[in-house]
Picture 1 (tube, helix red, strand yellow):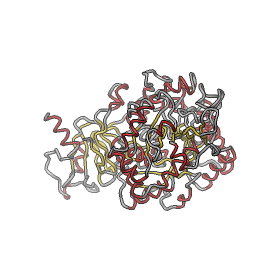
Picture 2 (cartoon, helix red, strand yellow):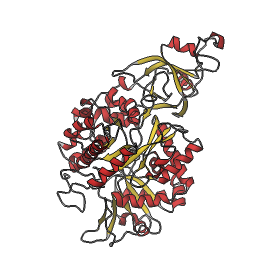
Picture 3 (spheres, helix red, strand yellow):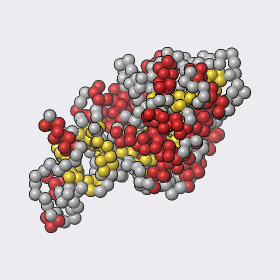
Length: 578
């Protein structure tokens, strides 16, 4: 018990535990600053080399690291109120840098009914979803959202884990007076009840929007409630436009809390709408951010704020705009990704031979990328299916040919079904891949049995193939598609085990250290922030996390059990466990 209290003292209360006499300003060496905090007594993993490197101590002052190295030398920075933190054998390393997600959307997820399947929720059948949504109307965690919007919302249904696909008839059982909507775990589909469809103006006479699909009842044009891609986004964005500023700001803060809990010191808003941008600006002006948030404007709908002063390489109160985002297709688990060969099993309402569909035609795709390059905007492009990936590669090649090749770092987001020949083109075109290996756990079995089959499923998120080309890459969780759980990302990248404990594509596994680089050093490079983040070096930003164990010294199958004990952003502790 005393041992545990000592750890709590050192990690949580941040008390000084050193009995050396305080140094005075006169005894400090010339040009040596007094540290605010000195950490020592554990594994301090610097992430500065191609192989693991450790330091005995690290000293921070303000928002910067001022020393990394020998403990004796670090203690020369002790002065006055310097806090000495004994790590008690725990591990300190750089804070995680988010390769891709939606921090604003995570806030929405936190405020509505959780209809994720296990292990992140309990919605493993349509009946359970209906019961959860019904109960949500009296749950204080969700009533704020319901009262402010008049809608009942759930996030995370996953048909890969359900007994059947939900329809509007199921949601009509929850309410016929209020709109009821559940969002697919991929974020690319939804199911709406009759009231929501009516309010959205969707009926049997409504045509499919470009880049989207309204699923219909069998042998009928009547919508069955399932909306894909732009049909779904049209409904969702219309709902979100009705959110008042207070609700928007609450969402953003709830999202930020989850990122600090999982050790992220930089989060991303990877498809910022005007409403999300306005909320993030308010948070920046009110100094409500405790971690850095980099946003990418939805280029197709919300590029007007690219003229903002926040469009900068530098943060203003933890916020900046990093570039623009494009969506070239949907999700493989939702069977809306655009493939070059058919899905193993076509989704409901589609004939065998169905291979998904694009968001844009080639002319539109080329024009968007060329415009981004011409304006000097970093462009991140969601492309899951290999046909969509090919379209993005060709669009980048076209823009390079017209405007010249520069260090623009266009980012391929997800690249879930990328082929080996496309991996080979990434380096040539200067494209940075941000991959989504969590698919191997959450949807690996689904990919094998329904989406792709072998051997295509074995090559999803091919981190080893990408690294073999000498490329850096980042990994991500795409929250709210999955919870922003960094340790789940680490586990999936290293182990590639499915829900049924099968290893999917074992040759695509990478080492724990490589997986950590893809969550620290390399996503910092992705964001043009490699000189300030992702490593523990003198002069770099004091973004740190403390873990209960060293990821490099435990069994790979235990990685998902790691716990973040503390998150330190720019020198300030913004999260402590318990």
